[in-house]
Image (tube, rainbow, N blue to C red; front, side, top):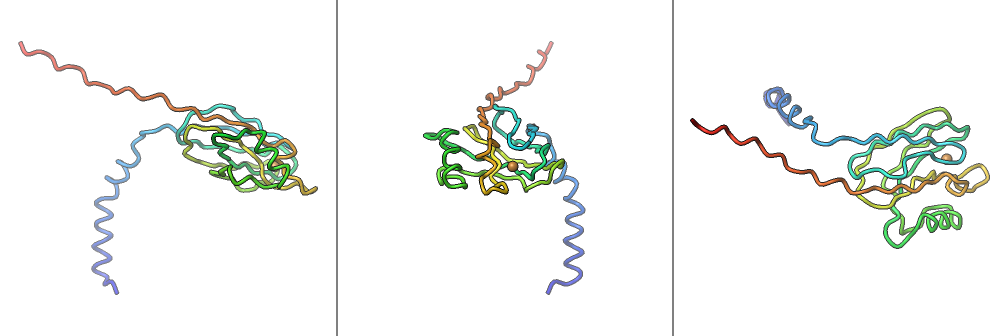
Length: 166
Ligand SMILES: [Cu+2]
């Protein structure tokens, strides 16, 4: 059992280290990309190319049906058509496709957010849920290819040379 004195000591440590630790962690070292995605019955409107890094997807359901959005990595050796064909055949993503993130299922006229760190590669945004007829929303057209391109290599910044002594 931890005595009351020990708890007080821990709290005191947090009080001392807290503000310093937070300010260091909150230093803005990387921009977060904002990607707006409109989900309708049954299609997505979204950028086809984004840059690698932290991405926040903002999904707006402008349709009448419920929707969600999964970010699926297609990888090398497969196409978006292969993905579509697999969804058509089985109703679920094929084993070679990697779902790297999914939003929740949202009602019409609502929004949701999904933040991921995406590497360069070939992806597809897809609504994987089935419609009332049992066919997936992907099969009805709710999918879109998205390429993630490598980020430009950051150039180092050099400090100015010190002024020469007289
Ligand atoms: Cu949908």
